Amino acid sequence: MTIHIGAEPGQIAETVLMPGDPLRAKWAAETFLENPVCINQVRGMLGYTGHWRGHRVTIQGSGMGMASMSIYANELIRDYGVKTLIRVGSAGAMQPDVQIRDIVLAQTASTLSTPSRAIMREVNFAPCADFGLLQAAHAQAQAMGARAHVGGIYSSDVFYDERPDLNEIMQRHGILCVEMEAAELYILAARYKVRALAVLTMSDNLLTGEALPPDAREQSFGQMIELALGAAFAP
Image 1 (cartoon, rainbow, N blue to C red):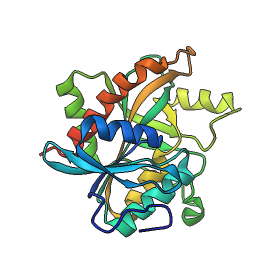
Image 2 (tube, helix red, strand yellow):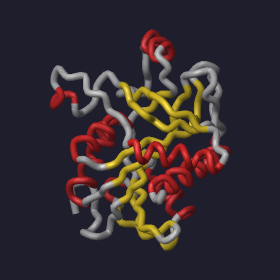
Image 3 (tube, rainbow, N blue to C red):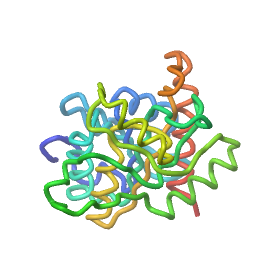
């Protein structure tokens, strides 16, 4: 048990999927896992452990933003021995060929700042995904027939951004989408020598203003969860 996670030792699997929304964690566990058991309710940040095709897996909410992600990823790795962490969440598309419902596999995550910036000091550390997970996720996407893009993303530390010039710069440099958690997750994975990947469904498009209707999100997000699970346990 930690400050933010109420699970007992042994209740969390070595592989954890991390949606930002705790209710999405509940939905994913009840939809995809066999015999899911709620192992965390502290601060309403729900977590469940169950089995997927014989593999033990935990789905734990991470909250919104890199500060919240940092709390849960640190405790999962340091206190519960988690070895593989996959962020599954929504993002806003930033390129013309990235459409609503498409999936982005984040190879790198650019950012202005993360909770780890104080540690890095003057170093512009380049956070990146685990290549094995990235490769497996791409293969899984192809096998599923999913529209998936691989490349760099932008992890913003604010939701209500008032820097259109920054978005334009990101777009010019090929950034596929914007979200709020992956960069810190990748830094922590590098620090603790574990595997991490962000698998993101495009729920919005910053270029067109299009947004995925609420009633269509679960179906699209389900494809993302299935892809992440297949990548996590690829032979």
